[in-house]
Image (cartoon, rainbow over all chains, first blue to last red; front, side):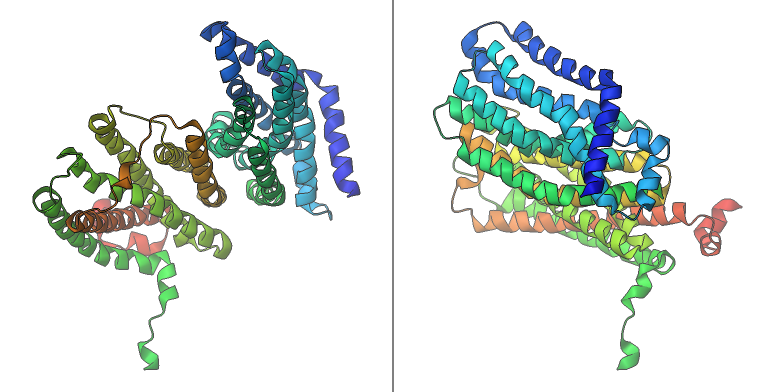
Length: 221
Length: 252
């Protein structure tokens, strides 16, 4: 567990030293979300209806931006090989890296989403559900995305390929995440969607680091 | 009796599988041709005209087998990829690689014929029905697998990376299917219930089953042909390939 904490701290420290990378993804999120009203029109009723979908799709895309850098710098300078050689299980270290990715790429989105939701005229309760859904969903995005990042490590055209591999796998997260907020807006209980999201998170938290580790070992061969 | 046991694992080696596949291919082509003729005969001349859908429904005899095969082939591909990953057998990974284009073709066919069917029946080329949407995602998964394999030059790494992707995909396919289904019932747009006509005429069912067999045999023949090509490509430097009559003939 110490190794896990150490990796998380190391990656967070690296992220703080290179703030621009994290901030770029965040501003990308803000800009993409702000573009939709400009394209669709400022009518509040329409915006309220499409807000959950737009915020979620923008969150998927913003998470994707950071994914290609999840393992690439460590692969380039040989750190990843040292991790694979270390006596600590590689899966644990990888889980730490994924956790750090979520803290730098996912958590800020969760915190920003209510502010952007106000732009779309969502009420307070809906904003709460949105935050809760993103809180459950963004770790899921990091976990699934890590598998894709490991598979495309050092591959020609890795960035575009990564989105091709990962985005179809994001479909359930998008449906349940945006669905939770929509259920609430239409006056139904969002509990079912949130429970499913939590269930997916539990499954992914167990299997994704394992699959990522297997993919990384292949890349390191 | 003991000397009659077939050593199946013998055929795990590309060298012994190559001639076996060569022998099987004409049979599968022949079966595919026979089933296609019978299936098309039933679907055009035997199957009755549908009460509600008229003659247009007959595309079902292409559409449903293509959709079934696209799902079935993904599972088979993932199974071969998994065997290749765990047992490190070369041929299994080659099989997975050979199945992927045919599977993608079937997925595309099912979407394409679905659009042709949808236009006269529902008045739209495309509706966001659960079945259609999950078929589309399945097609994306195939494309992802093909793209990943194409992007990695080292065949062994391509095999293993593809195997992990196929396995992750096969775990996700049911999740995607159910999520899309719930999403659809939540939204309930155009109320589409294509297969709900509860009693399908027996001849129609037979036509569909025989056409499925035809598609299956076609897929087998094509996959075996492709796997033979992959074997030749990957084993090009070995002596047994160089001594094959067809390879020798071309070299001279």
